[in-house]
Image 1 (cartoon, one colour):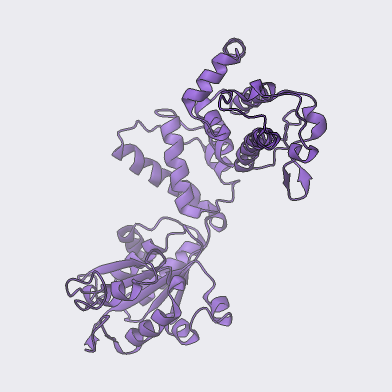
Image 2: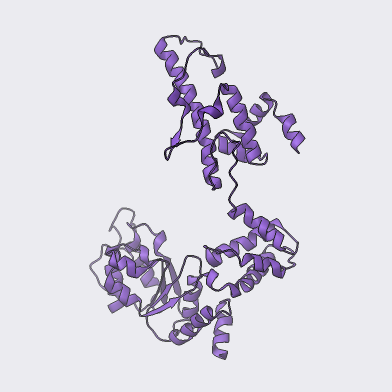
Length: 402
């Protein structure tokens, strides 16, 4: 038990839950045994921390640990990155270059997101695992490397094998030992420890006074599922400490911060469009409204051109065009997924100028008078928005609401 406690302290692994105790026990058993390890778990659960712990407690700890994110390397250059290349082997290869496997010789290589590697590359990875042999890109010479391979994935490799998207022989070779990291929602008893760790680290490095989280705040945080796991929790803790700088964090503060990010707005039936349950969808619908206006303007101009009534002195404002021209009924519709986002009966005989004024008024209200968000949502510059507010006389109304 003392060995586990020492390992946890040296590695910086947080948690007292049964799940994390099993992980620590596994690390203590396999660290000094020179076999490959596969770490599985959802994104954000801390797989790299576990890989570092295995290396740090192994016989190779005095040599380097090379971390490679396979998912971040483009398919066309991944073999060059892993195994190196010979000068002139491809455009841009101006010098001989070592790959990650050569750099990690006598140490450990951590292949994160192993499920993202192309099938062609998987063949060469299997050869390194079995014999330690590889060849640089563009070179016929076989080289040797002595590395321990730790791989990690948030995907179901077994399912990828069945779909022929991952080699079965590589899967079984990597999966000699499997360490599975539980999701944060399955180890909520550790959440308070993570909050304290992240809060102390962040406030110290940013010179922010830290007064702690009240117990109710931690209980409130445990009610959330944390799909982004520990990574998401870390970002949330840092955010709330910045917003509530120098204060003791309460349950109400946590709720307010969570509502800013995770809550879903209620449907507002007064809007001339149907607002979905997602804020991104709301912004898209507001932009669709502006596309409707642009579509209407275009049809007016198009009809004028076809009737031959356009001269060289084109009016600068759409309101000055011939109002006797009828628009086709279909121009009043924007259809998405089979239903009308702007209803004819909601528009009536409103003029384009009035519709633009209404759009700006309601969008300002929707974003609580945040003009930057309003301008971005309506697809106009802030300068144009300010001019429109002044033109339509909206400033007095806004000041009254304040």
